Amino acid sequence: MWSAEQRRRALAERLFHLSATVNSAKGAQQELTEGLSELIRRLDRLVPGLITDFDARWQRIDSAAMPAAVAERLKSELCKEIEDLVAEVGPLMLRVVAGGESTAVPVEIETCLQRQVDQAAPRWNWTSILYASPEYNYSVERIPDPQQVLGHTAGTIPRTRRDLVAFSLPRPERDAIGLHAVLLGHEVGHVRDWFLRVTETHRLVIPKGWRSQPDRLGIFLDWGESWISEVVADIFACLTMGPVALLALPELMMKAAELNLDSETHPSPARRIELMVRVLRHRGYGRLPTLKPILDSYADLSRMAWTRAIELPDELPQSTTLYAECGNAVVPEVARTLQLLERRCRQLLPRASLASPSSWPDVLHASDLLTQGIPCGEDVKHLPVDVVTILNAAWFVKVARLQDFGPTLALTDPNASTEDLGTLNAKLDLLALKSIEISEVLRGRV
Image (tube, rainbow, N blue to C red; front, side, top):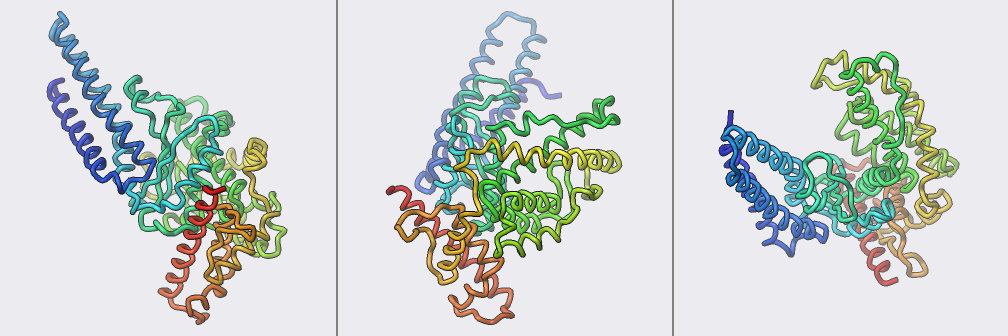
């Protein structure tokens, strides 16, 4: 077993490397985004603060008159406390620092991401950070203020107005602006959920067979709460982003997961697609002639998904049988509550945050411009077009009008090669990104 002195040496090494990473990032300040620069400033206070606090408390133990065994125990407890703090905030902060250079992320969407966060949690005044991850997914995590970290033991750091919130996007898809609707819809939807406490206040109905055994009960609650959190974020995405929330998410998920494959943290893509089609139809998008066939095709793809038995990956941390039983208990409970969750999310959202089918003519007009190779970030009155309209227009071109965009790049072959199709989609993404950049510049002048 390690002595306290050995743990202190190992901890000193971890803190040294954390500090070196911060200092290296400070040396490339011109390449950092605004949110990342704030994180670096905070880390620059956190690491020396941890070291100073640790040394002062270690010395107090040394200077106190106490038996050697008691001093050893207190020093080990001190090491454990600081180790836990470093383990809690260190990996996330280092991931963000490593992926947050301005060359790794689409800085054009930073301001609209921050605006979405401000709207989602208006009283928290959080600062958003966008960073690139090698993993093929999106995520959102809270980075607490260093003063909180230094003032609390690990595990229960509360939210405050000084928090940073870090959003990741897949590094290979830096310019895939259509996919980033997942970021602005689903991931910001998690922030809305944290602020409005939809998942936090939702009460799962626990089946009788899962109540009496603490281990089984814990698995059921963890699984159920994770699924509720994900479907709430999907609902918020559809309500705030409109059809693009559905059009973007399946493409991302189908690259990373099987259509009917569930996990203990996420319902299967098919279940999520069925839910999102339902929410969009309830909003009236299914009555639009240009959208009805698209929604119908997704509905056919996911029909009756919430009635299907659980399908799990082969590699599970515990008994496959136990997880299958838990999943098959969670599915009907979550399915039963979907309508209630949708109604509650809709009621909690301010009217100004709701996307509406009434704006679809603006989307169609923007898609006309995109098919001609013209950015759509400015309307006829020289006012900024909102990002929801731009993203919906770009995705509508992708799913329904790509053949209209082809001639713009002299690609008219209906049997275009995979390379040509990739080129078309990439050019459309860049055009949409330019549209957002124009919109943000105009918005800054209004």
